[in-house]
Length: 436
Ligand code: UGA
Image (cartoon, rainbow, N blue to C red; front, side, top):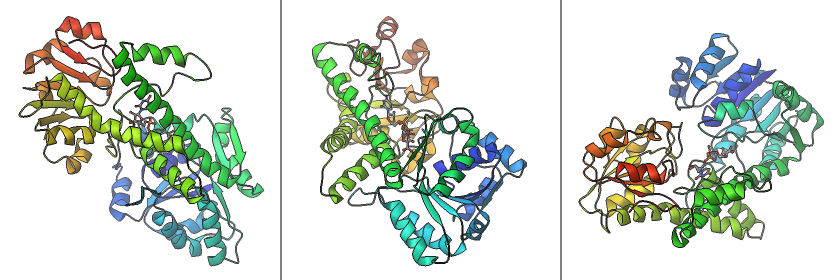
């Protein structure tokens, strides 16, 4: 099968490499000629475990090509759209300008029987609009438009792509369904369930899934706050409820609020979609508001741990990416946390194994360090903002010896309270009794 992928961003790159790995011939097309040149040299614009090796092998074996030449879509049986749909400035709705620009550009170049598939997260009805544009531009052709949302997580994207919980194919067109089933056949043989639904339903399933995940996180975060008030332990609460099969234990880790390029923006776009259709999603509206407040509120935990003020004090922050195993700092809870600490007069030193370059433009006043212990040097408090593996087993004696005061604010609950107690730290966690 010949596949074109429009967009060499996160979803486009991972999907291209994985489809090529399945044995399809993939041409990944991006307007950004510098990005394409770098990719052809084996340099990836993102950090994602396993991706670089896969891209290198696919390039070597000639199954994957990167090009800025949009005309190459003409060779493809299936063209995936994987361009960004960021939040539109001002109203938070999904900005579809990149999607529509891509459709306008490829419309005259597509083969007359191409299948155009949106992989980008797009609001309900976007596929209808794409189909309308293609009919208008290519009345001669029989181009089908389908929706095939992606559920991969950053940091685990390659694994998720190859071990999906389900493959969602949104189209009523039999030809599109058959060809997409063929593309995913290697996974189908692994018994990945394939769900055929209408295009609009597929578009909505993507948003509903992210809203549900956001709801689980926000709920456990609020329960964590209550645990702190009533003296209960949120880790045990999460386990106690998660063992109920109807609830499930995943996405019940309390923390500084959900971030990243998907859950926050998709919640806003879903709220907008409901408004446009004259209705409201009050639960999703509340989740979005609660999460925004939470990110800002995390600085107060640090202030409390430092006896009411951070003014003139040095605070070390471990973790800038919104989650481990990625360099992505978009909407990361660490960003508003650090800004708030700086507004309150703190000097912030920080370390992240992958996210420091991305953070620099958002946080120019931070002292970036070469490691966790270097960041902790002279700090009166150390905040764990992202649960990277190397932060889970820090040498507590060494940490204590380099810090000005032994205070740890663990926003990801990665340490045991007794361990911190033994090591002589003041330890503040989320939804658990700490060590005073
Ligand atoms: C999310 C979804 O999990 C994917 O299924 C989806 O494909 C993707 O969005 C997307 O729409 O493209 P991602 O944003 O990569 O994936 O990351 P998550 O693992 O969902 O984490 C999102 C945020 O929630 C992170 O800040 C994370 O720290 C936080 N989180 C997650 C918690 O605070 N607690 C949890 O229990 C889980």
